[in-house]
Image (tube, rainbow, N blue to C red):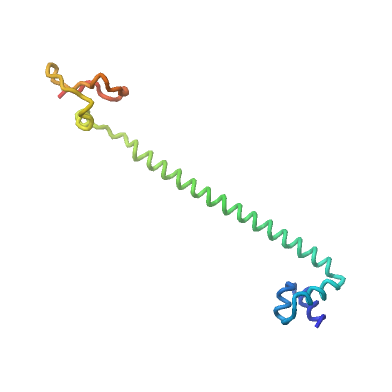
Length: 134
């Protein structure tokens, strides 16, 4: 039985828990048998190094995938921003009459000049028409 355990552990590279399940014996029996062998410490160190290398590779892969995902999200957001900017700045101009109709409360009608004049209490930028001929 000990020879089978040692063969599975050292040659087939099986884990102790898998050997115990396969042979239907306790894990402690497998552990005691394996740890008595002279090759045990060398094999244990080899398996530790292998596990560390696998962990390092998985971590690198996780970081790479995480960055790709974040970069794709950023690119998508940037594209949406560019699209929205293009839609909002099409360069469409509306006529002064249309502007006055949409902002009728900001203008008063002057009968003398037959035009609409921006109310003095309204603070507006330079692109807002101050006087609109009708």
